[in-house]
Amino acid sequence: MTTMLNEGHVRVQDVTIRFNGKKGPVIALDTTNVDLKPGTFTALIGPSGCGKSTLMNAIGGFVKTSSGTIALDGVPITGPSDKVGVIFQQYGLFPWFTALGNVRFGLKRLGLSKAEEIDRARAALDEVGLGAHADKYPQQLSGGMKQRVAIARTFAFGPKVLLMDEPFGALDAQTRLVMHDLLLSVWQKHRATVLFVTHDVDEALLLADEVRVMSQAPGRLIRHYELTQARPRTFSRSGSDLLTIRDEIIDLLRPRALIDA
Ligand code: ADP
Image 1 (tube, helix red, strand yellow):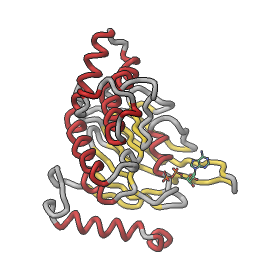
Image 2: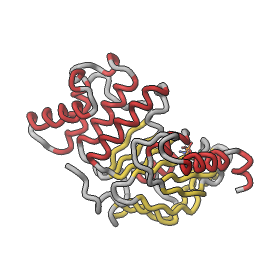
Image 3: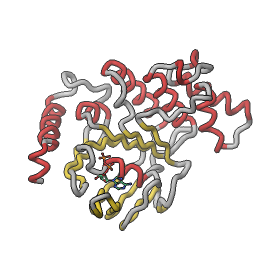
Image 4: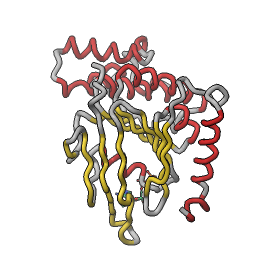
């Protein structure tokens, strides 16, 4: 089920997205170009309202581009597809299904036999350390456990691309660290192309191969960092480069820097 490294190539070319806002037209994304290489992990960071979700939703096929194209492996994205998985901050679990039922629901589209579906869903829950909680309902699970179910559900159906919109934003700091390790281990096994939106500079630097910084009004990608430090990373272990980049990004995200950009 490992994604081949030549699959999951997302190419965003000259994409502009306009909305009709309450006070008139809004350019949420301005002439944006970005390549998400197969199997890589990209973090997208920027101030609130800069267009992160819009870019993510456009790649997911939920929002149409006003101009420009987005393609997955050379095929234009015209709507949501099974090739793209999405994980949001609010888990998106069905409260009337158990953890196992939620993961099975995500597998329905594959047309497996019932036995295969259950086996695959159990294996996915085992992978995120929830094998013993398969029969619990979401309301019986902590926030971190719910997000593990969401991760299991998404990776279980084998998407080529995984879009994550502040997936750990509602979790406490300690749980976040545990979730980082878990996400990296599941991703390293399945190797989907990940686009991960976060407000947290440290989270971006600890997780990603590439960090892309956006500016606001209109939303544009203004800086790009490639990170090659071995994982798991920490700021003390991973060298001074990471700290230098952290300072640069924090400066870029200061309101004054955004106005001048
Ligand atoms: P972020 O995810 O970085 O917080 P968004 O992508 O949600 O930013 O929003 C970018 C801009 O587009 C904001 O000004 C927002 O108000 C506007 N916007 C987003 N979606 C819509 C919509 N459906 N209708 C009108 N304006 C929108």
